[in-house]
Length: 359
Ligand code: OGA
Ligand code: NI
Image (cartoon, rainbow, N blue to C red; front, side, top):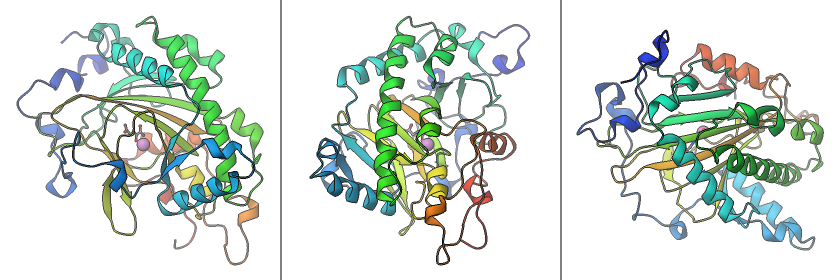
């Protein structure tokens, strides 16, 4: 394996991509039996028609006579699942195809082209890595990732990978489109909570957007490993594009993992911890994980939207009253980064450190 002179991090770095042809997964990926997933034949076994997970068509949201119905569907989806898929969301299918292509080209570049981006420092604005934190993880996860800040675009785009040459343009267009969609979705979610749709509009426009591009290569023993462990996202919402099935969401009530069906052209919406906090617990952030499969590589692009790094967010004053006392402490995106630098997310969720009293 090629290393970078003087960099011990890079020298110990082995991508999941480079392990895909092995007969077995190396020991460091093997989960204790109680944490292992049930492996379906992800390409054929389940369909959106039988899934309990909601799919919301965004076309009628622009029609004043139909909007309230969509808002009600969003309210139910957020209350019950903290998760839904959207169709007719306005992000063009050709752009989605192109950005996936550019990301795949990045992951398929020779390792020497990418090693300079390897870092275990979660504060780096651009980071290429494997697992969650390949230096600290006691159990490793079957994924490689590229993460970078994306809003405002003019501030960050220059720091993104210049290889493949199409990356900046395609990802730039996709980041702009998802940023606009996220504002539209937040308006609807705020409305569904009884808040002003323009609630915190300025902070949201200036908010942070982190693109996390995940590549999960085909895995020789998918029943023993995970692509990503159970977690919730820290921000307000995440908009996720996937190339095939693999994501599972946890249904709180039944303590059950439910696979998310692949719907061509759809985007997935996760509520994050900061939305649970803002709603004072009316909505919950969704706990999710990623299973891998033996047949095919999976790519996902998670656009994580939160307020700016050091902006604090707490429960909306409108949602706190005598019957519903304030249930969470204020926190920022920076607090989350500090939390994951110091803690194992397998042991403690960020949001659990913010709950007031006995939730
Ligand atoms: C994430 C995430 C899910 C997926 O990046 O936070 O949960 O399907 N990704 O890759
Ligand atoms: Ni996530």
